[in-house]
Length: 190
Length: 205
Image (cartoon, rainbow over all chains, first blue to last red; front, side, top):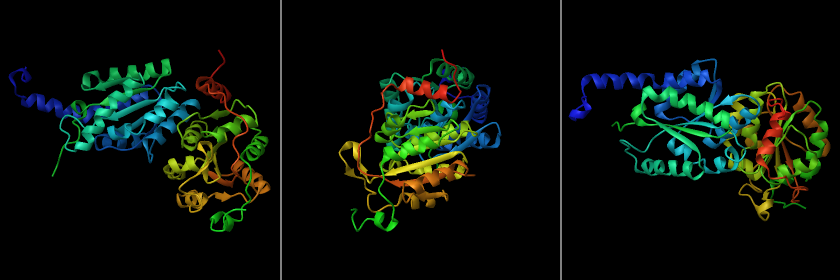
C-alpha cells in the first residue's frame, strides 16, 4: 500500500478526488430510500453540493433556517405530523443545540436525524472552530446520544442507512458527523 | 393603566387575559386543528383550557412553538395549525418568522401573547418591552397578514379570518401579567404520543 510507504500514490489521490465527488450522492440517495423528505439546513461550504442537489430534487422539501435550533423544531413537528426529516448543519451549529436536544428531542423521544459537517479538525485554520469542535462529542455523550463519524465512502451508506433506521425504530435522536476524511473538509485558501 | 411612553397605548389595544383568549380560540376549533403551546404559561393555559388530542405542550425548547407548528403544518397541509407563543419566547427565535414568510404555509396561524415580561421567572421586563412592536416585526419579516387584536371580539374575528386565510397569519394580543391557570403534567413521551394519535399518525397500542 502506498500509505504504508509514507507516500500517497497518484492513484490514491484520484480515488480521493472521486470520493469527494460522490459522498453527497450517497447521502441524498440514502435519505430518499428512507423516505426522509424534509431537509432544513443552515449551510456549510462542505455541504454546498448536497444542498444544491437536494433543492434540485422534487422529492425533497429543503430550505434554509435562521438557526439550527429552529430546524430541529421544524423536523420534530413534521415527524409528529407523519413526515420524516433531517437537519444539515456544521459543527458550530451543533454547538447551539444542547438545550433543544435536552428539552425536546431526547425527553419527547423524537428520532431527530442530524448530519453535521465536521469543522475544526484535520487542517482547521480558525482556532475558534477547532475549540467548538471539541465540544461536540462531549455534548452528545453527556446525553447518551447515538453518534457516528463517517470517514470512508465505502462505509457511508451503511452508517447513514442503519442510523436512520435505528433512530426511527428506537425513537431516539442520532448525529451523523461527516469527517473531512470523507468530504475533504474546508481548507485555507488565500 | 399602561405607561404613557409605551407603544401599547398608541396601539389602542385592550389588555386581555391569556387563559380567556386561549379558551376563546379552542371554542372555535371544530376541525381537529392542531395547537402548539409554547413554553411556560402559554402551554399551561392551553392545558387548562381543555384537553384535546391535537394539543402539544412544550416543556422546554424556549422559542420553538412556531418552528414546531411549521413542521406540523408542512407535514399535514390540510390541517389547520395554531401556535401560541409568548413575546419573550418569540424574541429568542425571531428568525423563524422569515422562514415561515418564505414558505408561506396557508394552514399555519400564529398567536403572540405579549405582556412585555418574563412572567414565570418573576415578571422581569423583556428587552422589547415598551420599545418593540411584535406585529410590525412580523410584517417586516414578510408576514403581511399580521394584526393586533384590539379586544376579545376583534381576536375572535381575527381567528375566524385565519381559519379561512390563504396564507400564514399572525395575531398579536396584549395580555395581563397573570400566571397560567393550570400546570401541564410534565410527561413528555405521553404528550408526544397523544399528540401523534390526535393527528392520526399513530394507532393506539
